[in-house]
Image (tube, rainbow, N blue to C red; front, side, top):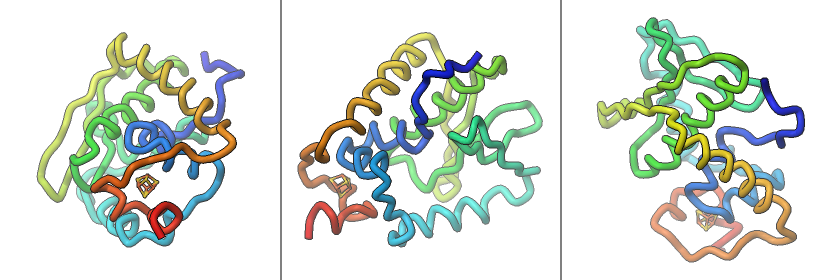
Amino acid sequence: MPNPNQPHITGTAINYLHICTRKLWFYQNHLEMEHTSEYVDLGQLLHEESYSREKRREWMIADLVQIDFVDKHGILHDIKSGPAMETAHIMQLCYYLYLLKQRGVSNRKGVINYPRQRQTTEVELTQEREIELEMAIEKVSEIAALPTPPHAEYMKICKSCSYQELCWS
Ligand code: SF4
């Protein structure tokens, strides 16, 4: 059963934790700038145009995460634009599986689809990953509660980040 005391943490927050804690802080403190990024537009386009032959159906879990589609074998799929941030994608999809498990659905497997690269990555919610996720959930809350955003060094990904103006101009 879901824990009623569990903080409201989205799949995006788990993803950002594994990309940049400063980005996570902005997001958790409602400084959402995704609409200003052309990369987000590309992601949305990919999301809308990919897998049109699949019986795509988006699923929401507890208003926290949106699953792109569930295939005929019951496997969860998450569509991403490229594998550069694969660890973040894996943890995000594991979080979906974790939330489902908490709600009595024992599906432990998912697939990340990278349509531009014609690649897929299979993901499994192992016991180790569940422990990692529980630590990640705590970490998200700790970072969100910081009075100011954590310091970050310039990274390659900053040039495609929707928060780059806040960080580097
Ligand atoms: S621009 Fe770079 S440092 Fe700033 S939030 Fe984005 S990824 Fe993090």
